[in-house]
Image (cartoon, rainbow, N blue to C red; front, side, top):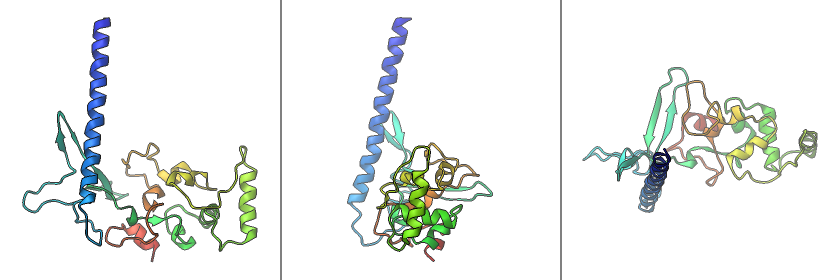
Amino acid sequence: YRGRIELKMVEAQLSRAENFYIAKAGVAEALAVLDNDNNTYDALNEKWSNYTSNMYRINPFREISVGRGRFTVSYIYKRDMFTGYEQVFYGMQDEERKLNVNNATQDMLESLPGVTPQIAVSILAWRGDPALTEDILMKEDTYYNKLPKPYKRKGSAIECIEELLLVRGITQKLLFGEDTNKDGVIDINENGIAQYLTVYGNGLVNINTAGVTDLRAVG
């Protein structure tokens, strides 16, 4: 029995090692594609996003064989909450297709599903928006100070989307929907606002790659 257990442990270790290097191959392919992207615009029909060769009808990120395995780089571009239909793109997602949470106005934030005026103001206060009055900021500070485990309002730029979980009114469900493990697989009833937000880019939304919700947010 000990021999069998040791053999299974070796096989498991080999499998983990293989998966690790297959994943690294996917990352290397993505970096190589980005290095060769020399144009002055970003669009969904480029090789890094959802490109398919007209001649060979292949995609460099879909079911690519590496040794005994395969890698796929993909994301859900669009989903229908009523039918469950999901449009999958094979490639990388443009972060500038999303709303930059550090530059978004209150109206933009309120346009997102589930974001109330209070939550929008709390996001602005958390990032230290200079347009907010001292009265509003004091009320926000009082809220955080009275929590069972109090902490200070940050008052500066949000560094990652997960940081929003510290903001007043934002719950795990509001931010990530039912996709609490953040694996990118969103069921029919899931609609977290994280999919519409980013902390990257210059604050401008790329209209060539943006989805309907983000385009509506920027007007």
